[in-house]
Length: 117
Image (cartoon, rainbow, N blue to C red; front, side, top):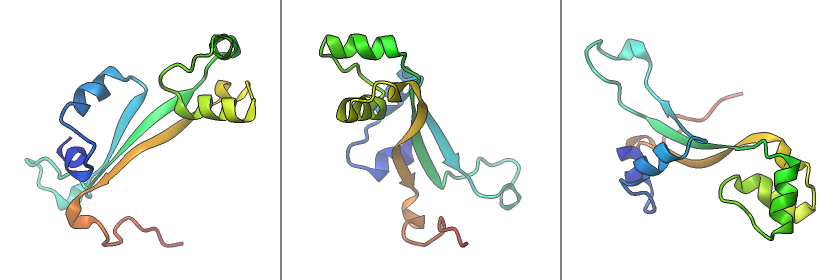
């Protein structure tokens, strides 16, 4: 959590509570290779990816929300695309939205996360 807090000015220690209250949000961490670590030590976190799983909204929920002029909290992309393009089937699909990427300051700009083709 410290990496997330230190990597962006908008992050706070209270974000841990927010993450625990939002079941659609998930954290994925990048750790060094296990053969580089001693058995009795916790590996350092090199990077964190916060992802929100969105979608799978029933068409009846979409139509109900639109007729009431509401846009429920969460599911940012499905609601935005549905509203912008008047496509009421889109929110039934599911996807993942990247909320935040945090990389350890010592590794930023070093190209460690670049993939060669």
